[in-house]
Length: 345
Image (tube, rainbow, N blue to C red; front, side, top):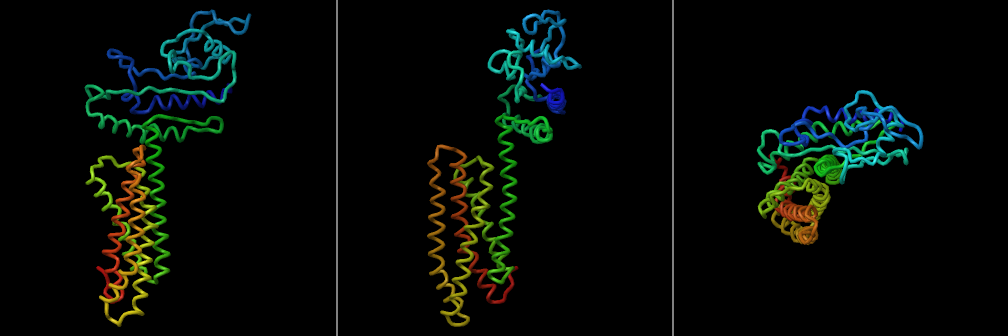
């Protein structure tokens, strides 16, 4: 019950309620009352309106007024009076039922490390007749509000005295989306590191560029196949397939490169056909076996009861199949061009 802590909480709630789109997306009181429904929060007591006397603290000490939890007061009420009001066995409007008591302290338990605020949002949004009209468009508007307005405020709201936690279905989806997008950037970094090692190993930076490009082609091809088999939903977690394909595809490239170089000692000079046949007979079998077993192991998730995991397994499996087929079909041509001295265009 420190004053600085209460002031921090009040500032956060005021900032959220003053967001540009809040009044457009909030749950209204009713059909004829278009005011936003007040949040459920203990701050409604601390900044409540004063009423007639009668509140009692303890056994004998009386106060001169009652506090009504409407949150419309400009000055914060005294902490003892607020604790007394919160302990009253009264069903305050909008403070009863499942979400009625969202605080964890009152006159009998005056100390707590947690305080909860519940904000109300609802449909239909402005411009829509009812909540069923173009639901995806309404969700898109709300997601944009979360990403552009509410989420940044929540991230910046923590202080040395107050730590902010938050929950909500679409808010959770937004956090997962942001986290996976950041991880995808790390996957690009891993791709660059793999290219650098491959360039060092093969002593051919340009060859490595075309090799990694071949690996990356598995992503768009796998995505096309993923859509063609009837999936109209693309979970954000699918972006992490780039981590897997970078490692799997690099293995295919190393195997093909080594087999191609070893074939030079076994074939006549300039006999490209014999070298290619020997390389594919050695490396091709290993790549097909490795790629097939890896792809099938991911595709086995199609029987999972968890939908995101099921879609992720199918997507990665298709990308793995696309990856080893592209590596076998394109990279040997790059090796031939590299050895013949012809620069790929």
